[in-house]
Image (cartoon, rainbow, N blue to C red):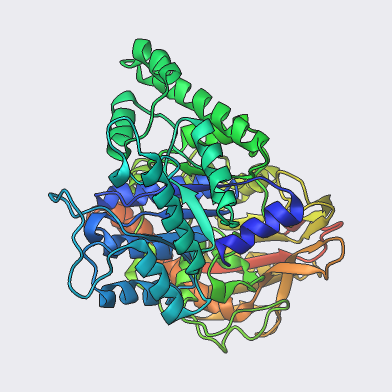
Length: 594
């Protein structure tokens, strides 16, 4: 969706104040993975969009494209990609635009950009554009209305026009006139350069309106995180620093925590003044840091740590091609990024009731499913690379994860357990000790309000429902005992399969079962999670592969721990178990006396 449409829908339609975040490409692979973890936490607070910068002279072009695509499709946030025309032939610009269009991204921030590293001035290259206006015109001419185009606004005039003491009135007026040309050429949103004097920003907005610029103007706020960084950024942008700020910072400039606390206070007060003047958008230049940006939003009452809302039980992709996707098999609940990757080649997505999952085929397993962010590698190494001397050690490792004593799991991309697991964590711990090694579960829910912080989703005024679900590995002997117990439990259905594909089930191969649904005002019933036997047979390859590529690989080649895990992989079954009686059922009754 275009950012301008989201802003108008929220601000004009609902009267809501909205916020957004900016990030930049880190220099190392580990930095990139850490950034995605940080984005995950920040995006949980539902920003309207996030943007990612484009390095001077196109220096980070490939990385920016990769990050933008992952943001849109795996972090699942509406993504705006910066695009500059410095040192960029038209062919390279079109390559970038085609790339993001093919990945469902609809938003571009069109900039001239800074000179390449080592150069003081911008020089137009042959076959390139001279300014952002040229870039806006090109995007509209070649891509029509597909892209939402944002441009930069400069409350104090563009830095190139600022001399000592500020920009002249003529330079400021010329800069405003140029901004209007960009809007007239097709830009539909303005985000401003950072500033620290809100009166300058408010005057800039008023001046824009007087010359006929009517589109939203979003204030760009950069929290002060450290003193030297603050001086560097304001010096580079030629930003005015008020005497009040200088007086406040000077005594604490060597105390980083005090500077950060003041930065949060200043950012909060600036935003309060801006919002009081009827502007309902805030864009935060995060510098890839989360605490200051989130603290400002909390001070403004725009977010609450305890009230992270979910439109669905899983985070829907922002990809324009997947906009109507509203149902998924439950098996990838703890590995959502892998699910998106494996379905990225689908030419259609389930809408409403689940269709034939074998029609648009799942993508094959690739190395990506088993490449983990390095910070999580460290957690796994600490928590799962402890020598395993017996099968009982395996049972205890799974039990400790279910009880929250471990933060990581080879079968989960998520950080720790989901809140709803605490409802059944003791029972899960008990069955893990018996040898039913759980990797996915949900408790039964019968008409809980959709605003519940534990199981709620879908917006206000609704009620949500869940069938109890448990997914686990177990030995053939345990499975046979469980199957016997299930004969006396008519509400329980199961599908079991081993690594070789041998299947055992009491439901048909096409018996799709909705296990989560919600009832909301003025909507059809929404059923976003299903147990689908065909998808389960696809998922089992990934689930079994994790025994070796997610866990055993943490041990040396000849380690006995590795051999034990490989034996489990060869001999165990993966089981999906549903108790369809979500009112009176007890799914754990199936495990009693085993």
